[in-house]
Image 1 (cartoon, rainbow, N blue to C red):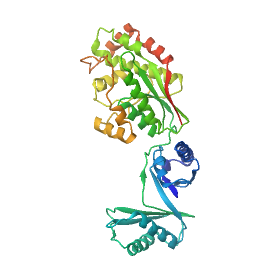
Image 2: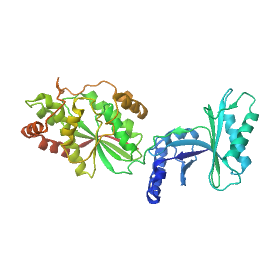
Image 3: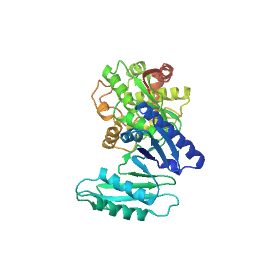
Image 4: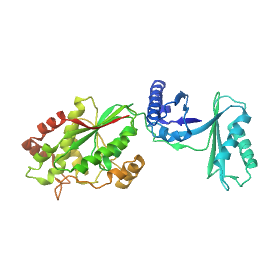
Length: 387
C-alpha cells in the first residue's frame, strides 16, 4: 500500500521555494505519522507527488490533517505496462464497487508511454463491465465510484478513495505570530486558519481572574489541545498573561460603557509587547465585523490604534454560522460552544462607536499602558502538549 499525497499551492512556487516547502511538508508528514504510532513510514517526494509507504491505508486520515496536503490517496502500486495498469484498475473495482453502482475510470498518464489516458479508460472500463456478476454501469457525470490511475515514469498507482486534506501551506513556513486565544468559538478557528496559511502560531490566553471562573480556564486548555493535534512540532505551548489587575483597574473607570474596548486594547498591548520581546511579527484575533459591540468598524479602528504591530483577522468577513462550520471541521466546536463562567465585567450597554481621544484619556488616567507592560513581562506557560 502506498499513500499518494497531492498538494496545490506549493506547486505554483519558484524552484527554490517549492523545494523548501516540499521538504517541510515531507518532514511534517513524518512527524505526524510517528506521533500517531506509524514509526515505520517511509516518505519520499518526486515531482508533483509525495509517496508514503510502509503504513496501512487508513493512515491516510493522519496524512490529510497535515497543513499543505490537498488529498491523501491510499493506492496500489503496479507496473507501467498497459496490461498491468488495466488489471490493477479491475482489481480495485472488485474492492470498491457494489451492486447497482455507477462508475468512471479516470487515468492520468505522466511522461512518455506507448499509450494514453483514453486507451486506459476505454479498456479498463470494458473489463470492469465484463468482470462483475452483479449490475454495474458507466456513469461519467455522477459516478458512485471513481477508479483512478496515475501512471508515472517507473510505476503506476491505482486508487478509488481520496481523503480530503486541510490544504494551505506547511506549518511555520511563513513566520511566527502570537494569537489572542480565549477558548471561545472564534479564537481557536482564527488561530487554526493562520496555522493553515503557514504561520507558527503562539496562542496567548488573557487570564482575567478573578473576573472569570475556573471553567473558563479549563475550556481554553481543552480548545488548545484540540488545535495542537495539527501542529507538527515536538512541543506546543499555551501561554497565559495575568490580566486580572488590568481588568480591575478598567472597572474603576467613570465611563463603564468603554469597558470592553479598553479591555480589548489592553489585550492588544500585552500581545504586542510579548511579540516584540520574542521575535513574533503580528497578532492574530478572532474578530468578525459587526459580531459584537467591540467589533464594529468604528471600534476596530480604535483597537488598531492601540498597537503598531500588524493585526491579522482571518474571520473578519465570516458570519457566525460560517465560523461554527469551520470549528466543527477543526474539531473545536463541541469544546468551545460549552457554556462557562465568562467575564463578569461586561457592561449592560457597551459602546459601539468609541472616540479615540476619550479612550486615550481614560487609559492614561487609569495607567493602563504600564500595567499592560507588566502583564506582558509576567507571561507564563499555562499548558504544554509534548508531541
